[in-house]
Length: 147
Image (cartoon, helix red, strand yellow):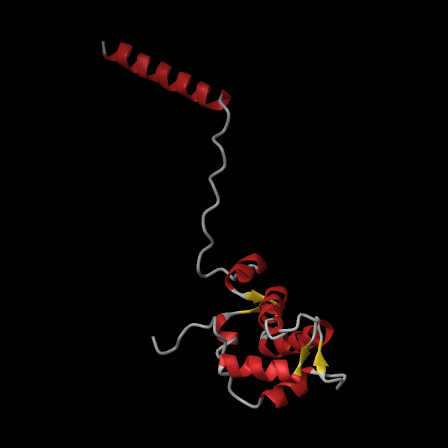
């Protein structure tokens, strides 16, 4: 009786082993979220940071709101009115002069893009092409340090 039981169990194990060898392997496990100890990839940084393209788009949209006559460029008078409306700090004439590189009295898209690219490069301390929250401390989108 014991021999028959052992024989049946052994036969069952052999059958199970044979079936296991002939079945297809299980699918690969789904990728899990990256561990916090692993370095962030470029796409992770892009999601959590601000790329030059996004930085320029945001600033250009805000800047062009100053273009009240819709001629595609901003005059010193338009810039001053815009800065006053925003309650911006500093002298609007000085900030305008920094952006108006050809000194024609207007800031166009080309001058704005060049200014923003320089500003972005200056803010991007680690030169990874993405501004993280700690690289833009005075920025509206930066975390509020008081909270």
